[in-house]
Image (tube, rainbow, N blue to C red):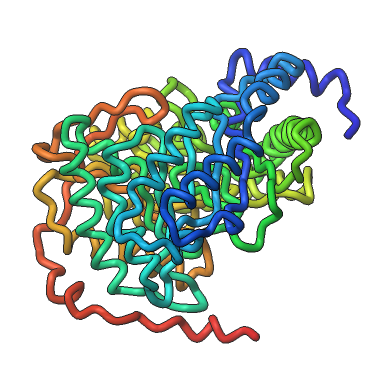
Length: 453
């Protein structure tokens, strides 16, 4: 890949002044060969396999960071969904597997390890049920484990039995991590149409269609895009779109260069470059700020969904032009707790849970890092999940819910997580019950557009 001196200078400015970084280098590791009925043997084989693949991951990424001068914020691992590889285990509780993953994550030095996951969009096997029921204790007894459950796809519809179960799992997880304001919920995501190559947590897992060992990279640049848009002089919306595309192009080229070098040095395949605008609590490094730079007084006001749709589309067009390996989620995240502009919009009253749901129709992920009152019922949580899964199913896109029912909190309180997770204002939910609807169970059938074979 030919890099011109001007691009190097631009990248240095982006890193120094505009919060550009490689958000994550994530190594995906196939664990299917580790399956064993004996849980002790299974755990040992998982430990050995990850150590073999990832022992040099952190050191290598740090070397690349020094070589190019580009910050690599997180080093992560994703593994085959544990519900699949643990199906044969003769045990009802998979917490020890999470603890093994956590131990090896600490020893190799990564920030997070994802894949304590299950794919249950059409039904739940005994292994899936063991995994799901183990989630609360697994997240309460570990530091670096992330968990995900895919409950819907466009092809299969929505597994409402799984949706109902996840409402209770999220509440239980919040209670078991009460001392940290429900932090366990920040490491648990419920998906529709989950991608198999997503490098971002908490939703990363190593899909069954992936190579044996692969490097996926997530690049984040909302600060760069915000700065570029604000530098324009009285632009039209077309001018703004072009500016975002060109900026995304530059960011993508930088990310792929880093990812391919890491993969080469580790003897792994290079997978995808996920160009998702993932904000941080830093001032200016905000998706909401980009939308406001387009001309909105406050994120969440009328016009926000249209502005977000244009942003998401322009980011994808710029990334696709720069690389044939763009994948994962790629677009714009709107996590409330991690975006100062989103937090400010909630506090102003311009951004509500209903408006966020509307915005997820056109962006990458879904209702992300949303804090709701601690007394929110499991049925209400499940109903929020069901709504978001329906958006993903009908629109043939990935959507997700990462919701924190912070114990003991009420609307207007703030939940503090620190670091990249930031702080979340507790948002109101509807008082009217969805309990009867959720209790009906069964499956919401797939839409007619699923019949495309």
